[in-house]
Image (cartoon, rainbow, N blue to C red; front, side, top):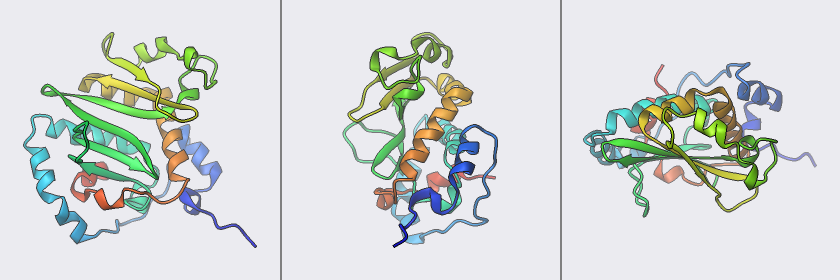
Length: 215
C-alpha cells in the first residue's frame, strides 16, 4: 500500500524545498486565498485592539518581512500555518505564528518597542552544525542584530531545539535580513509544516495574515 504524502510535500517536492531554503527558487503559490468569513469576524475586534497599540504598525510590518519564511503561504494558510492576534496565553504576546504543534515566531511589547522570539534548530546556530548546546555560535548571533546585547537564547525542550530572543525592531529587522538566519528559520518552519496539519487553525486571524500576504 502506497504511503500517503503529508505536509508541504503535497505541494512542493523536497528538491524545491531545499532550493527555497537557500534562496535559489521562488515557489509558485495559489492565485487566491481560501478564507472563512466567520473566522475573520471572530478575531476582528482583537485586530482593531492590536492596531491601537503603539507597536501595532511595526508588528504588521515585521510580519510582512517574516512572511518570506513561510513557503506558499496562500496555498497553506490556516491549514499548515497560522497567526494569532493577542492570544490569551500567560506570556501576553501581540502575535504568534504556529505550524503543526509548534510555535515558530512570537512578537511581544517591550515598552513602546518590540521583542521577538524565534524557535529554530540548534544545529543551524552552532559553530560545527552539531546539536550541542555549548557550541552555540554566539559571535554570529551578536553580529546578526543591530546592537550588542540585543540577542539572547534559551533551550526549549526537545531534540535539536533552540530559542532566540531578539530585542528591538531594528535588531529584529536585521536578524530577518541575515541570510544564514533566514535560511535557518525557513528550515525549521518547513520541518514542522511537513509534519502535518496545523493544530492552531481555530486561532488564525485573517486580518493579521492579510499583512503577511500583501503583494
